[in-house]
Amino acid sequence: MSDPSRGSAASSTRCLDEGHCITCSDEGVAMRVLEVTGADLALCSLCSEFGSEPNEVQTDLVGPVEPGDELLVHAGVALLRLSPQSLLEVSAEVAG
Amino acid sequence: MKFVDEYRNADLGRALSAQIRAVVEPGRHYKVMEVCGGHTHTIYKYGVDDLLPENVELVHGPGCPVCVIPMGRVDDGIAVAKVPGVIFTCFGDMMRVSGSMGTLLEAKAAGADVRMVYSPLDALRIAKQNPDRDVVFFAIGFETTAPSTALTLMRAKAEGVGNFFCFCNHVTIVPPLRALLESPDLRLDGFIGPGHVSTVVGALPFEFIPKDYGKPVAISGFEPLDLLQSVYMVLRQLAEGRCEVENQYARVVPYGGNERALQVIAEVFELRPHFEWRGLGFISHSGLKLAQAYAAFDAELRYEVPGIRVADPKACQCGEVLKGVIKPWECKVFGTACTPETPIGTCMVSSEGACAAYYNYGRFARERVVA
Image (cartoon, rainbow over all chains, first blue to last red; front, side, top):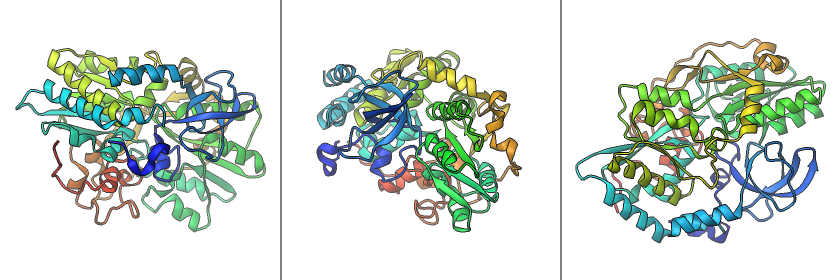
């Protein structure tokens, strides 16, 4: 089921998997805040790809963010915060 | 990767596959539509359908925004792009979608200033860097992308940017689903609901599907186990005689949606009386345009656009593919005249279009390996 060619850097950002625009369709990508750059703006990089090029993201919809926060980003807008705790709970549910 | 690999575990996939087999009735054929193009992509990338019993068929829905854009709107965009002095910006895939007289990429080759952007905010940045030029953004997408365009327009208004315009092609998810459910040539047993659209609109807007049409819905995430679990949830509802909206993607999708995102959509946009969809025709109240308060940013008011309805090329059967009436390989030009390199239809352009997913993952024919 997993894609062995991608190893531990396996990405859920399938648009990027195909090497094209991250905003081509209605799917969000997980990004991590690197730096707050202005009012409701933050520089973020992809969670799934180490050293990916940072992008400016509008954070109006999720409130104040801090470096290290993980966000679901779509077309340059953070739609929600990704909580590791909630991901763990679901992981356990699937595994169970 | 933490929290991703967990959803790609092969053993759990096989376990879910066995659970699915346990709830299906032998002899009954099940048709479940995955609405979102992202789901279609996951299904074929990971071979999710090979883990399903032969009598469970996944039907691919109209949830790829690039795929549903009609040719006439592409022509309108190209007409604006060709206006002298205009910088025309759009997402990458849109540049390769063909109108009746070529693509935006071809318009760029012919001299138009067409630039690819990753977000509306990038387009606004270009506008601020080029105050003596008009910058037009080709806005496209469902409710997931609409907040991004809305926030950018609000930012442009607040900052007094006067040379930024939006050619709005945003659409909404519920009206096409209702149109599909009303379609006489499609019999569906249930739906896999779109995950990231639902982060904005929530699960609530899909309640009409069980209530008015008696079909179960499971809103799904985008990893292979998410999809398998969602198929199981739909089939289990059918087996138990239940019919409701279940939220498999609760780790991301709140039932009521994102209130602030819905507010900004409501502030910046209003519903068009009708909007044309490729393959589905005109659907009432399915498209968004800029509200009166944002009319100064409306490219359709600033420029003359042809606004002509253009019929799809005869050889292309994207319409039937988008409605799930035929599989991509049943189209006459699939994989021959129409490939991702030289797409004729929209479904071959975006990697999340059903035709591109079939093509890229080698689904050229009917046979599939059933586990």
